[in-house]
Length: 235
Image 1 (spheres, rainbow, N blue to C red):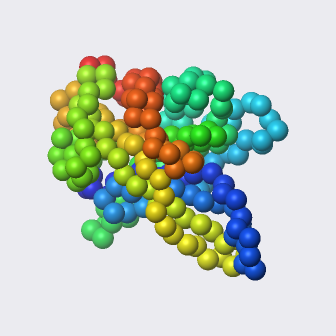
Image 2 (cartoon, helix red, strand yellow):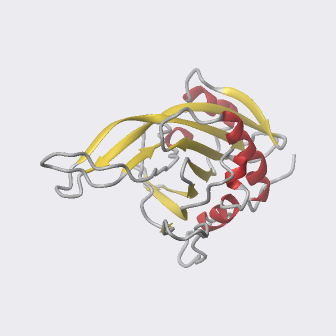
Image 3 (cartoon, rainbow, N blue to C red):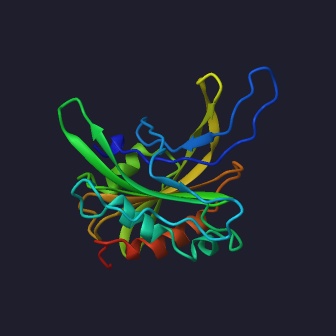
């Protein structure tokens, strides 16, 4: 079901708090669609701060589920040299880049496989995923609240919406995880075909500093990246 689709997200490290039980690094932001959330922890390749070269995506497709497009392919499409410029932060570069397939097991015994990719810069994190759900984007809009705005990307129907992220804070000493409200993420659901016959791409952006993301930056990313994804059909 489309309302069970998850847009995974992970933001960068936070500063430890002072006190007897100091918090370690790791404040992560999760973007939730349909009330479920999962943290993208595997398949990420950290760029050393002293290295000026952008992070690269993992290139192995070993043992990936059989899908029209893989997480690695999504990462290759998303991790473009001009991504910082599209986001309005041209002096930054990709610090982490990842691609994977998330597998969901449901009560009726079915499995869903969601290819996804994520690129993190100093200011922004960008997530790209796909779904083969048979619900049209126009119907998905009903699950996404009053902030939904209709858009068209490359001739494909799309909806733009906002959602608050969930901040996770990890105590690396005691293993405790604390949660709280995070910043705002801007997301775009784009139909896989021009007739909105079911299935969609989702592009999400959010900032590490919890400032409201630039909606125009999200549109620039979607309009530039999605046509390079394998299987995209021109409008």
